[in-house]
Amino acid sequence: MEQTNFQLKKQDAQTHEWDTRLHHATKATREDWIGRGISYFCIGIIILVVASMLWFITSKGIATFTQNHVSLWKFLSGTDWAPDQGKIGALPMILGSFAVTFAAAIVATPFAVGTAIFMTEISPNRGRKFLQPVIELLVGIPSVVYGFIGLAVIVPFMRHLVGGSGFGIISATFVLFVMVLPTITSMTVDSLRAVPRYYKEASLALGATRWQTVSRVILRSATSGILTAVIFGMARAFGEALAVQMVIGNAAVMPKNLISPASTLTSQLTTGIGDTIDGTLPNNALWSLALILLLMSLFFNALVRVIAKRGQLKHER
Amino acid sequence: MLKEYSYEETAVQTFDDKMPLAMRTENMQVFYGNNHALFDANLAFPKNQITALIGASGSGKSTYLRSLNRMNDGIATVTGRIWYHGVNVNEPGVNIYEIRRHIGMVFQRPNPFAKSIRENIVYALRANGIKKKDELAKRVEQSLKGAALWDEVKDNLDKSALSLSGGQQQRLCIARSIAMAPDVLLLDEPCSALDPISTVKVEETLLELQKKYTIIIVTHNMQQASRISSQCAFFHLGHIMEYAPTGTMFSNPQIPVTQDYISGSFG
Image (cartoon, rainbow over all chains, first blue to last red; front, top):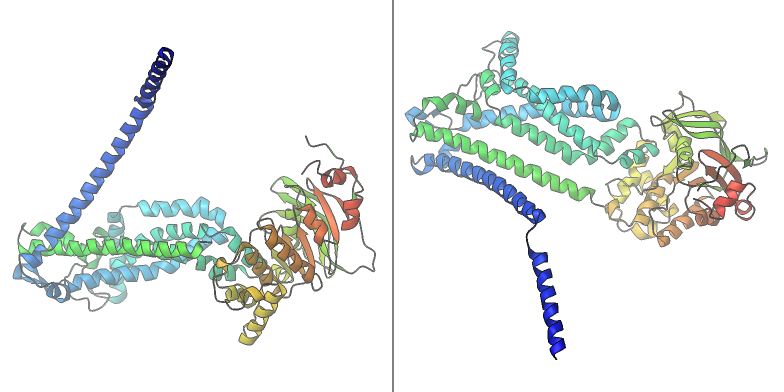
């Protein structure tokens, strides 16, 4: 009895020793905690910033409707924009934004896809060595430079070509075309490179030509990636302010044609934001424009996610 | 430890004029950049027989096979002559699309397109200029029957090809190749990604297909070679060491390296 007790005590002591040894903090566990702490802190800050921005823009943006009692429908469908006289029809800017965005995407996509096919299928070596850096450079040029070139080259060119002032949707389209082209191209290149090599081999081994292989197999299986690229390009075009403002003419009137001055949501924001007083209708109306921009970019993001998901489903095997 | 074998001592059979041949290579060399991957490949393939190419990994058997229908274009440099219907098809002026139409290929990994079963076959036919609807439908049925897949998929032709099992996908790839009525069918380890039951089905399909086509198959699996092939060529480190009727090769290999490989000393 005595002996067993002694043994138990000894065992207890050993268990206790192991217990502390296995539970006490070491350098490794402390590092773990610190690392986790830092990343939680960072992500917390980011979430805070994003959430407060969303809240800020939303609360400011809806003030037009809650405080100034403008009807949402009138805001979206009205064609007169004169906030200091109480007229805040945003349709001209909404139309202008969509017009330049879609026009730029439509013009840029064929060029981008063609360039991407050249870089991946026709001349992969030259594509990687020469074109890749050029495109990366084009992505990095500040938008004010693009706008300046547009102002100095494209606007006078359009003036000579079709008359008028040269400012307008078509000039903005040209500038945006150059700006979104590298975005769409480089993302399309990525999605073409991601097409499995065995698809290409399967097609070639069946006697299909290079053109048939590219158009019916490679482009087909890269469709979701290419669509994503185009939407990213459109998001960039939709949100571009400075370069567009420099060439579009900034007349808040309904766009009648492609060559008369018009304006977009972004260009109206940058033009008007300095002239308004916080809390007044003209200021609130600009925030409402910003809210539309925000909602549109959320929409573009959602669209990209939906497309990516559908693309994934297609490739599951 | 791999023994050194002399490359001088080879036992490659040739055929006399009475044997009808589907194709033949003469002094074929293959280079990947500066790397000489295949040396002096001289093989002839009798019509309507299955020829197996065996050998360890890296022995050059897949490289050889891929050169036969010019799939190595742009990947490797292939010199020497590839005779097909009396024409050297390893020349710049030759239309590679025509060659691949007559010399079909099935790959190691089943690679159907992410399209429906029907579209997978129709793609090949359209690529070769067949557009009439009834002709397309007829060919789809014929080729799926030829690949012994028809009974399993005839009610689901519009289902995605990727929903098929691995063995069915591989037979679909075979069906896709024979839809264009090729002369020669090249198969690059078609069963290595398949389970034993699917493998049996593919092998049965091939035995049936040899009545109409000449089949050249690369395989890792010596039992498979002995089960289905009539002729067998053994590759070792880029050299063709022995080429003989399959029965002879497995019961009475002529040179030490083949003996060692077949008895399982390496590989």
